[in-house]
Image 1 (cartoon, rainbow, N blue to C red):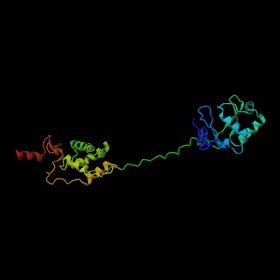
Image 2: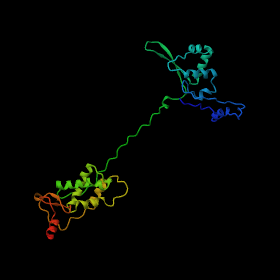
Image 3: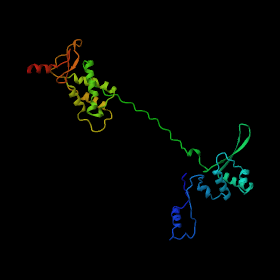
Image 4: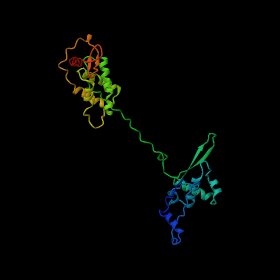
Length: 285
């Protein structure tokens, strides 16, 4: 245990070192500490005991001796009188001094066998409450999680075909490759997919929709990217194309496919090219 005497002068070690210097003379008077570090068999004693202004020297010595004893040792008057030459009268008086100043307590207890025994309790810091060694941590306030606001509503497609919704879902899942901040949960993706499908229904390619959702994003961290995307899908929804033909009844509408040439979503019984690409190909031919 590495414990220094707190009452030692701050320059005691330098004086000790200078004591052996051949060109320096010893101090003419006053106390000089010749300290050596204890590593085994030592007891830490507070200056409040060692320099107590009201305790007698015998009382201070007995307190130091009792504090150095291991737990379970006998510290009654007869045992101490057998150890020291002062006698039972003086030792009893010194123990009463220690009791009066809180360094010693003697309590009587009844054993399971019915005997009355006296326990001597040595206090190295009178007036200290045991809880001060391990102060209880203040109770932690339970934080009530703030209710999460629902995402804004998004446009809905006229005919939410499974193929169209799957294309929209794939587009949303791919946004994180273009901006890591646009990482969406499965729940947010399911909420936003109909809005993307509504854009694809209006003859926009997935590339155009992706560009509209990822361009001019704020430079700051996005607290809730799904809310930002829902806002863009609603406020920037383009109008339906004026040249689109009237939609056939729902019973005969074909599923959506992605054009193999321009990446545009179109309805057809089979995959292939959209109407514009077929027309352009026929004109070129």
